Length: 248
Image (cartoon, rainbow, N blue to C red; front, side):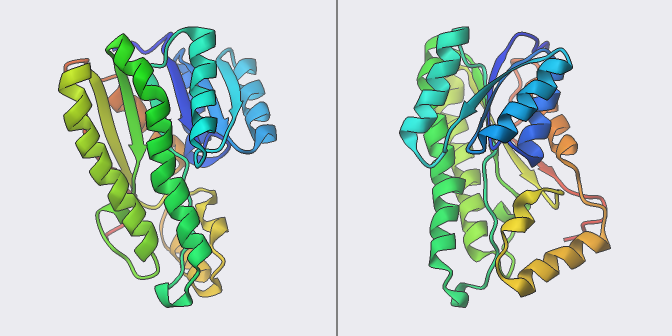
């Protein structure tokens, strides 16, 4: 299915999977709304996309703020009249043991990883319902399927994303012709690991990166494109993607 001319909103677009997805979508002729807090990163990415012949709009915003999400969605709707794709990609992963009691980090993960998905979804859903079409991508993780030491809170947030995605698909697919895909990556090279403040867990992640070839953001972007280009009769509900060398 051709996706040229569609309008997409990508959260967490300033780096990693989000930036890679924005580039890939733009290369396919999709108009991309770039949403994240770091405006200078968004401006640089928009310039790169425009220079390559694509079209991108910068939407500095914070997924933890419902009003900010709504403003970003409304800006796209005002300019282009619709929103066809939402990529809920913004996320945090500051690993630590629960007994370290890094409560502020727990709250931030819940705010971004769970509430951020809900806020962005709520911002675009009225327009998708009105146009009776759309595709929502929610970025979960292998951590939404399996629990690992040091990732208890992160795993809980990603399990929530997985559960919400499936329920959302059941509710809005048949009723509103809106597809929902939950992406569940394994190890991907990104800035997530830079947020780890616990030295022992940061070392574990560095050692892990040295032991296998991580996926790149482009790999996940290609996975999103696969589901997005599927025939309209087909909803790719879940995609579990991990490095070939990742045996767990």
